[in-house]
Image (cartoon, rainbow, N blue to C red; front, side, top):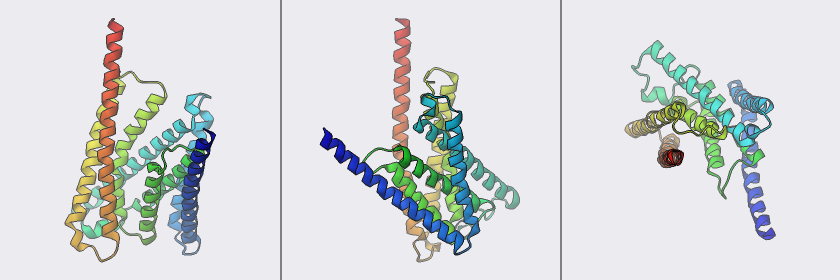
Length: 287
């Protein structure tokens, strides 16, 4: 038993060391770009990390000393704030672009790859700062599981892709479009926070409305939007240069679409589980 615990502890320490090292290297890279190449706009990444870490501290400070102050609850609450901020930013950016310039040319290949909509760069930086904060928070409180934690790997890939795009100031608008999925993430986090807070009555209007919005945004903001982005990439494949932009974009979108399928299956299981629990409680009440 002790030997098994030591082996698990060793694996966990190896995982933490790897992802912590990559996070430190990433921070060093961002600092290098800001200080030595004078890309001061990248300071929005630091501002994003600071904002979400401050949110974490405030939630922890004002939460009652119960399960609501648990690191997982606090982390989920901050993730909810990120989804609200990011989805609002994306809607604002797209609406502003639409009102000022119309839809004509808004989704042109050159605009999506080489252009940068107003506030798109800053929004992407701020979201990048969140992924760095969340990576640290999960490592610090060990809010992950598995030999290769998918959430930590997901954050690492996003940090690499986002920062490379920000360094080169390319495909910023494409990445902003992918963040539309955060509209659905709002309701994923709301469901998790709601259950942690002990609100689990599947018959309540709030829970039913939450599930309706969960499924609606899952299909519209996540599935449909990501399929359309993938289709746009394939359609404009011949317009890309010989660099790595197209392979990376296609690989990233393929990964997102696969993750969406897995997420949909998990959502369906959770939905059936709550409905089954509701019927069981209803039958027990009548008996």
